[in-house]
Length: 439
Image (cartoon, rainbow, N blue to C red; front, side, top):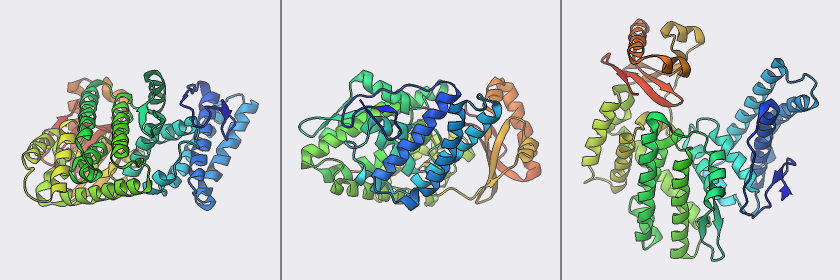
């Protein structure tokens, strides 16, 4: 065993061992957040990111580290005041780092990330740091997937890869996949795992790298991953994704003698992903796709209907548009939707007006935050429910809460609303005034 830059025990670079303890208590939790930030910054530094770019994150980290030192010295004996200061400093430092991380193109990350020179614990902490918050953009989701895949695979003597032994992979996945899908979302997990498993089986059918990228398979796959968005950090989903990525890397190696990380391959993947985003922009902007682009504003049942239309329309036109439309349709049918699709692909979110606490309280007591979002015909509300109180309500009580919210919306001239819980839609009030509970 060796020690990483932060002085914590970490596996020797290049070994396949992975062991990392879950933090407990205030001190343990803050130590873990401090180590995660330090390891993640060291990873970016190893990629050749300039010091000036890292400086804002480094300054915020130093402030957080000073507060951690106070806790370690026991000066305030873990007082509520110190915990509040630590939480604020930790959140500020993590946000500062994520802003720096967002400036690093995925192409640069792929090209310069060398897993033989970075401890596996550092890779794990970086991935966990990304998964701790909503991804928001395709770059962050792609980076998370990239890191987890490298964490659970190991290189063979012939240059190919295989997944880590199941017990080791399980430890890594449980540590980095922080959002296990449960309850109504368990069905989404099953369908996503089936999708990735089926996609992996097709890889052996490709006789050239060009066939992988020109057939529409890769574009469709990328579009499906994007629609999962914040649902991706589920252990079972990520196991299936990583296994697929290993199969893809091995197929590329068998066909070309190159690794998937070779500059030629990373350039090709980056170009395909960039084109997928552009194609998706065109698909969502097309008149016939308007119903899909506003699927959550019209309730999930209309999204499913739109998906059915899209699945039946896979002939004619640009092949990449057809494949991507099919991917969108599949994603809609397994429970995601166009709003999260646009956000998670980084295609640009409409300008929003964040509501203050008083404005939220005037609308409904079941909400805790929200924004007004302009659309073609007025303003819509995108809001988060208070998770505990919302789930404590009966179906009848939720319907009553939606009725009150609809009345308040009329007074504010808000035409539609989407209510979420942890990023998943739970209720919709559409422009026609229909109330829809989605769980």
